[in-house]
Length: 97
Image (tube, rainbow, N blue to C red; front, side):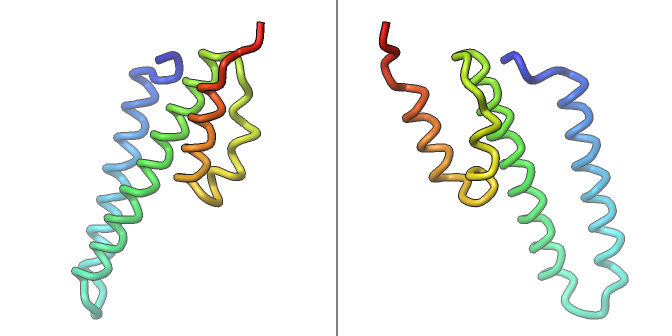
């Protein structure tokens, strides 16, 4: 892959651990159900990480095919799965010679 580098992966993992640590310490001070808040934050953090990973993959795939990925950013933010499917279909079209 063109986009992934060791610095990027280490930075993303460090940010994940940092946010997870903040969520864990912040959740212990709350009087309401800590489990529900922690679970919600965990799911949210993982979803955001997955969306970043998928968008980096989209950048890599469009770069290899000489297409522009940034026109897909807004639709991806609004509806990730349908946009991903449309991008894959768009990239699989036969190129007219």
